[in-house]
Amino acid sequence: MGRRLSLGPSREEVLNQASDFRERFRSSRGFSISPENHEESSEVLQAVCALLAEECTSRPGAVLEEVSDLYANLSRTTWTSDILQEREGVLCSLAFLAWRTSRVLRLTKTAQRWEAEYASVFRQTLMWEVLESVCAADDTLDVAAGPNAPCDSERIFQITLFLQDQREVIPERTLAIAEAFYRLLSESELSLDIRPFFLANAALLAGGSLRQIGRPRSVERWIELAESHLKDDPDPTASLARVSFLRLAVLHEQSRYELVTQSASALDQTFADLGMEEDRVKCRILWAASLKILGRFEEALDVLEAPRAWRHRIRSGLFGWVLLQSGDLHQLCGLHSLALKELAEAERLLREGRQLTGLADVHSMISCIYRSFGMLREALHLLKSSCYEHAKLGLKSLEAHNRMLIAETYLAMGRPHDAETEIRAAIPVFEDEGMVADAVVAVSLLREAIRRQKLEPRPVVDIRDRFRPKK
Image (tube, rainbow, N blue to C red; front, side, top):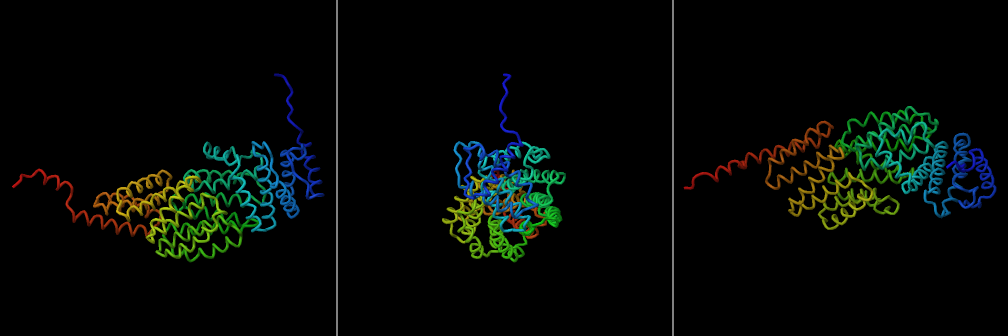
């Protein structure tokens, strides 16, 4: 309507206020941060973060000390009517700077503590929902991480954390996004202290997604790319540990379970030494899954004992995976009541965390309990549901495993021809991905299905008999 709208102070004014604020804060560590006063507004605090970001590589020790104090002070305050969660936004920016400077100083364990702190706050913010919308609408991520995006480095860090969680939700789409993300980062100009980290982690996201959808043979190229970038990383230790975990996960997919169990203990200790709690939980879940397939049920339960005790420190979606493996182990040990209780709780937690691959696995495991009680039709229904869900997610290896369980159920129901159909659909997947042990089991089961068809009369013979003259 022709009115001149106030756009607030200029950039220079805000930066001057930020410099004044830093001086007062440094001179009195008890100085309280409050959004009520103009000088302590989120605008000024974000400007403080911008000033500190310029000093990350030149004076990392001083920056780490300053942002740690600011974070501790701000985290003790409550901002009323903070609808846009500006306080959380500032906390994230401070945690990011602490993470970055810790890496420059090669304080790996400190960096991992700040990464975990960042993830804990970030998962509860509106920005997480914004990224979810962006990834759903645009798998190139140009909007979120393009050259003109604000706060490039922190935004890229957010995308990395977001995609790590999304890999268990929609792995096939996450693969497409991770590949586009890697190409985008390859063309971006980033500071040398963080560029190798972001490129390596984008490669690990792509490789991990390929493993998740049952294409383990395609993972090695991305692992090699990640390792090549980490040669230039000032603090590669944590990322190299994640590379080792991905290699173990590939071995598990290739049915090389003994190798997994031989290496998992050392990797678990590495994660423990570095304070990488979520990674340690994932490692123990994989370790227990390999022990389970080898028939070493008690050892597997012992491996899961520690993650069960850490429940209050683990996000609910991840703890759902712990209960999933624990429940399956208990049903294999014949403790069906306990197994059903744990699997039901796992289903609730996985649904809350939108861990769709885990939900499909839960249905497969509950079907095994139904089969043990002779409830074959109910088991078959759950298995077909799980198979459909795995197929929809693009998880071909898990879909193939479901088909094997369906085939076994058909054999128990006296339907060998249907069993043969399922097995023949599964075998090519095992062969394509080098899953030799699974292929051998499938061929053996196929022989049994064919043998039973030869021993039993065909349905067409029974039909003809009904129309023969009675003597």
